Structures are given as structure tokens and as C-alpha cells.
Image (cartoon, rainbow, N blue to C red; front, side, top):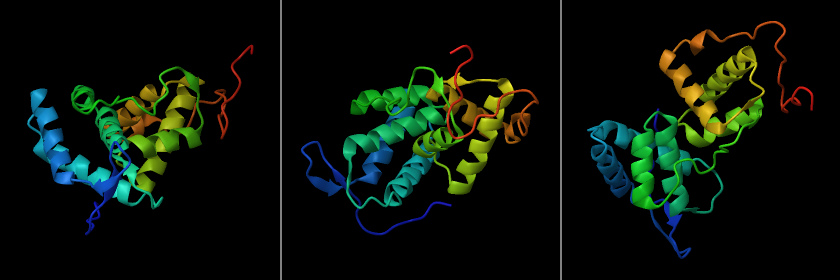
Length: 189
């Protein structure tokens, strides 16, 4: 469910001056990015912007987020839900990197790290994020992956969401090391 809020949301502009965020303009910009890629997905653009607005309003920090961070979050959400080309187009239009905030190199993973990444990049409720984190962690354990990139984790999460059944990854195979809150050391290292 998307919560609707009344009132203005302040964002910090390039000079640091707070101003009201124009979510209607943001949605229009996003629809243009979809159309530039040959997609007429007004409802998806509108839904993503509403989800972004809810995510920003419920952050709880009290200080305005920068306009650039708003564009980075929206581009990251697009990339995470499978619209990489639209994310790249939107990023080009707003001079942001759709993969900002993601580590591109391989790194050890933990359930807490997967949860934090999913919370930053996917429009999920807390319960959905927890369940998807569990599914991703089970898949990574079952596959025996000790190191992954953030992009791989996001693509795995989207794959599991599209399958709807967790991809059959519920319990890890016996003999595969269980990764807890910290990444396990690599073999031989």
C-alpha cells in the first residue's frame, strides 16, 4: 500500500537551499525516459514516483534529502526492478549514475548487507524486504556463493520476485557453509 501524504516535501537543491520537491514533474520526467526507450508505461512511472515519495517521507531523518540523491534513488529503483535502459536514460537526463550506492566489485555478503541493499534499491515494505532477504540469502548459500556484486544481488532479488515462489530456494544444501552476519573468509585465505 502506498501512503498518501499532504504537504510539501523539501529537498536540497544544488546550492543547498531547500525547496519543495515537484513529484508531478519527476513523474513526467520518468515517463519521458520510458518513452525514449520505446515504452509507454505511465502507470509504472507514476507508481515508482509514489513509492519513492513514500520512501523519502518515511526516512525519519528530518533533514531534506538532496535533489541529486532523489534522482539517484529513482534511477537505482528503475535498475533494480529490471528497467536498466530506462534507468540509464533517466540517469543521463539528470546526470546521475543508476548504480550509485552499489558496489560493482565482488565482495563477501551477509544477510544484513543484503537487507540494507534491498531496502535502498527496491520499493518494498519491511515484511517484503525481510522475506526477500531470506530468499536471497538461501539462494546464495545454496549456490555456495561467498562473494557477489550488489548488482548480482539486486538481479537475483528481481528474479525471485518474478518467480513468485522464491525460486525454490528455501533451505540451503547440507554441506554449504552458512553465512551469518559477517562474510566468511575465502577458502585458502
